[in-house]
Length: 110
Image (cartoon, rainbow, N blue to C red):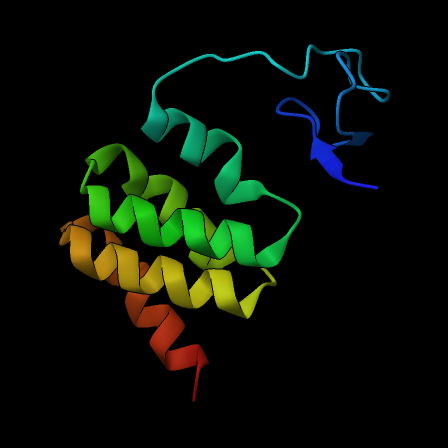
């Protein structure tokens, strides 16, 4: 069975379902721009490789709206792949607000 994740609650659904079985949201709902979608849904996706890929894409796009969500991902995630991707993305974004979080992550790695 192919799984489709709900953009509202991340509940698992069958591919082809119109509504989420958990929360009732429309599964084909499109809202916001691409950066918003990456931040709101893909950065918090339950599949670890997808959230890490979202962080990489956010770093490549260069939109400063991603700084705070990436800092949160770096600090709060238990997914080491996401933490690494978030750190790299923050480095690419070059925002000084990320320096304390990056420094702390570096200290914690040792």
